Length: 357
Image (cartoon, rainbow, N blue to C red; front, top):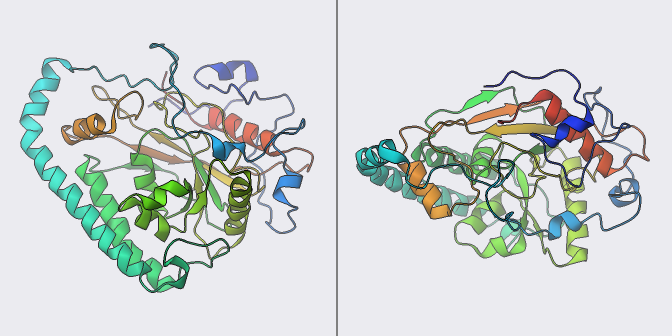
């Protein structure tokens, strides 16, 4: 693993391995490792933290498609390229043949874990007036006994990770207390990321309202008190940002987890951040998720979900590292908006963590 870089990073060096097309750090961006500040006294999030000085829709981050069009053709600087060879050579064939019976067992464990987790979640939601169909705007937090029952589902999520070959996961640092950092932001590499965070943090997430109808998934995210958004409705996007602020302000709610890149990358780069995590103006804790590998790139880039799952099932072990970085605080000057806050976090990522070259 590359050593951590604690020195200052000039803006000109952020092109590699940091891609930030729409957020270019300015000389006025300050390091965000400040003193803890209270959460009271925030102004309206949209008025006090407009996305750009020249205007624009501050909720546009929610209207972006999850997986934007890929750049044409492979490139050494392609953040979406999965670098696993198509065939994997002799070692890949031999490993696949040897682990084919193990893959069947893992698939059975995967199915059982989903079934048990779904059943526990269904019981936890049954009779809860706030979740008969879907969480309504302004709904209160999940009662404590229902949250405790959700531990069955969280352990099922850990079993799912085990079935995919993540027998152990390296963790550096610790989650900050929820009252100090109510919002968590992370880079996004694979569908494994949200499964891990569901097990580790059981956070609230922002999701398209269409996901509520997906079997199993809709029930699980409902228990996470998901913040639904219609990507094509400006009113819905504005409401989602207000819900992020409301749930971040109340310690009785879980942390709010956001992937500000808005899509998955191969983990070697950061791409430009969307601003939903930064508009409310609350401290955030950045997290870096890495998947060290030699033969098998675990990123969900230009590879189908079925192919990626099959390759995970036929590995001896898949490595995963999760590093919790120190809290990043919003700018103290009100005129510095959500864009500047996002710049601070990008600079903090570049100074405190190392991405693969």
